[in-house]
Length: 129
Image (cartoon, rainbow, N blue to C red):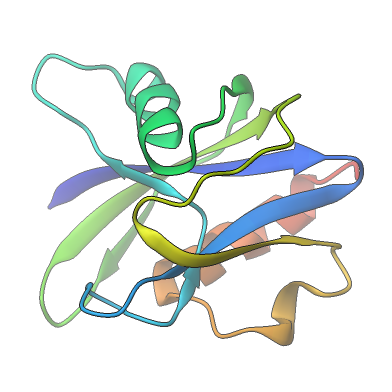
């Protein structure tokens, strides 16, 4: 089981999602950005680092949601979600092919990675947007 963090980044009533690039596991699918926890790193440290590395934005953690476990054919992950905020306007894509700010009414317009759908469901229950 691989521990992976993800960020549901809120800004102005929308949330940010990114599309996985060609050649990556789950290429073309949308996800909440994040990444693997490094040895000796907390989940909180990981998500701040990963978002800076992947999107070049600084985030503030607002809330931690419940982790979900998902078994993909290639690997099993424990996805640890954080609701976050940012003041940054300039997203710089490093590992993704696209990004988009979604209103909650638009969130199902794209194809999501399966584990992220479980995070969306949990988020929508707790959302105050």
